[in-house]
Every structure is written in C-alpha cells, then in structure tokens.
Length: 456
Ligand SMILES: O=C(O)C1=C[C@@H](OP(=O)(O)O)[C@@H](O)[C@H](O)C1
Ligand SMILES: C=C(OP(=O)(O)O)C(=O)O
Image 1 (cartoon, rainbow, N blue to C red):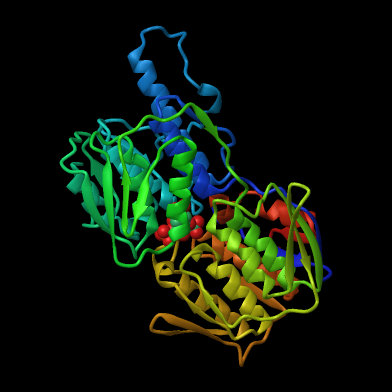
Image 2: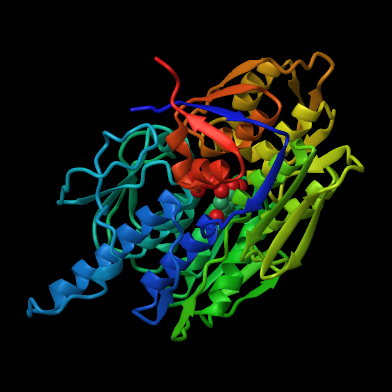
C-alpha cells in the first residue's frame, strides 16, 4: 500500500539537532567484510537504512544457519541477538519493497528488493561461495544492469546463469567456484559498485585479485571507501594507475564503526539553503569522512551555508550572502545530484551539471524523473550530450504540488525541502524513504515541518 503525505511548513527557518542514521554504503561494505571474516570483524552499529537491515538479515542468518549445520548441539546459537529475520523474501514486495514473507529453499532464493549495492555485493559474495542461490530483486532491480560484474566473476571462475533477461537479475549462482585467474578487467564508467563488489571478495580468492579498470572510473570515492574499510580490517592493497591489487590475506580481529550518512545530511543542507535562516546541528559527522558525499559542505557553501565542525558534529548555518557557482560536476557524488538540482531549480539558479550519466540506471531513471517533477514548477532540465542545463525562465512556484516519487527514496527527500516555499506539498509513497533514511519524516517534524495523511 502506498501512503502519500501532505507536507507543510510554517515559517522559513529550520533550527534543531538531527541524529542521522549510519551510512548505507559504509554499512553494506562492513556487513560483507564481517561475513567474510570468519567471526573476526564485527559491525558495531548497523544502519537503520532498510537496505542495510535487509543485508544484515541475509548475511547474519546465513552465518547462523551454516554454523548450526556444523554443530549437533541445539544449545549452540551464534549471534542471534542481532539477526533480522528477513533472509528470503518473495516477489510480492510492497512499493517500498521490504515486506518479508515466505521462506523457500532448494535452491535458496534471496530477494534483495530495491537494494542496488546489496545486489551487486551479494553477486560477488555468493559467486565465490559454495551454495546454490538465486538472487533476485524488485521489478526495477531487474532493469538495473549486472552483466559487467557477472562477466568479471565468470572470468574469475564463478558459474552464473541468467534466469530471465541476459545481463540483468535474477541470476543463479551455482556455488561451485574454482579460481581460474587473478587478473581481470572491468569497465569503470557504468557503476563503481561492480568494482567494490570484486574488491570486497578479493581477499578470499586463493590467488588474490589484480583488477584492471578500463576507461573512466565513475563514483571514485566509493571505491576509495571500500579500500579504506578493508584497510581498517587489516586488508592491504596497491593502486597503481588503473590497477588495484589485493593478495589473499587474513582479516584482523576488529570492529567497524559506521559514520552517519552524508547523503542523508544533504537534505538538511537543502532545507537550510531554501530557508531564510537556519541553524542545524548534525552530530557524529566529521570533515574527514570516508564518504565522498561529504563534499556537500563545499557545494552548499555556494548557497550561503557554512559548515562548522565542533561539538562532535557539524553545525550548518544559513548566511545571507551567497556566491553561486555555475557548474557542478556530480561524477564523484551522484547521490547528491537530485538534492543540488532541486535546490538550484527552486532558487531559479540556472546552473549546468555534468557527471549525471549513471543516474539513468539507479532506483529510477533519475534524469527523467527530475525533468517531469521540475516541470511542475516551470523549470526545465535540458540534456545536451553529457551536459545538463537548468532553464528557470518560466519558473513559478505553485500553491500546491504533487510530487511523484518513482520508487526512489531520493526523489521524495530531494523534493521535500520545497515545502518551505510551496504551501502544500503532497509526496507520493512516503515510505520510500525507508531505503536509506527511515526517520526522515519524523526528523522533519522536529524542525517544524508537518507531515499528515491527505484528507480523503
Ligand atoms: O558503492 C556504493 O555504496 C554506492 C555507489 C554509487 O553507485 P554507482 O557506483 O553505481 O554510481 C551510489 O550511487 C550508490 O548509492 C552507493
Ligand atoms: C543509487 C542508490 O542506491 P543503490 O544503487 O544501492 O540501490 C542510492 O542510494 O541513491
């Protein structure tokens, strides 16, 4: 069932403290590392992001099952206190995609819903494993390409078949891996998630991995995050030119801490940017984050927001004077694109954007979704090859606006700040935010937004 909400806001300021949940990207990496580490690495604080909770459920439950099958004694229970019972879910997912249902073995079917990183990471994880698994996802997941990763894993020695359309989930991982080579090549310009997936499992490959990245590398900070997190678990690498190498190594006994989510923080920067004055405090965020999306501090400085790191977090203050930058390259921070584009559109700032190529294969075609929704405020996002330009010449903010969200959490969260400027904003399928930031609407209420169901 889809639940729409009506979002309103009195006053054009937002003041308060917001404790953000853990980064979905960091958490998903940490969970794979934990699962591969034979009990040596523990994830301290699993993010509330539904994608991370789902992945934790799958991996920790698998662990419990495999441990149980190794021991006879029914008293032996491993780590059940942190297990989320969502390992196998069926195809009848809700619109937000996370309703668990029937368990179905032979071969095990794992439905990852709309969780892209989890889909890619598990493809590599099960690809080098020894159980037969069918990996599937939401309808949209079946349109998000996986061929580049599957080809790389097949070259390594994994046996993987497509269950429906060639190059797309669902896939069957046969669980009979034997490493054929340590050297593989992969295109860098489609999704960095394929590269991360391979780097995460590299340490378990008997001959290690030598990964050659072909062409341009998109979303580079995410690859750096992967390597940095592996290093926290004592897994070393070399990165020379376009070649990343990871030999077979042992994990250290350690625990990984997940930082708050900078992509989620971006919506608070957008709120500050659209307000007359705001003072917000986001505890736990640091300037030396592993997350590339922390670049939001630099981007939003162009919109008059200062970021001060003190008291164990970041204080955002909206200042009156703003110096607007005209060109934004989003290649290293694609998840910020919707936030920044909507802020520019709302302020009538005719900026130019590059590095948006990967947006078409995310939770929805984000370019198309932005074009349709921005047209509702008279703004055009014009595509000229690889450059996108905002035309705000006919911008007009209506009294009421209906925001379609296309099963995309970031469409809901990027448009929500418009409630500061538009008296009544109806947001379709509000639960979609669960994917990365389930507390989004309740957090908005803390700074004076009102979210209520539409009157029938
Ligand atoms: O590795 C990650 O955690 C992510 C990488 C990015 O994807 P692409 O590499 O496909 O751009 C990003 O958009 C996604 O939300 C998370
Ligand atoms: C693209 C995203 O996620 P994923 O690819 O993990 O579904 C996102 O969170 O914006």
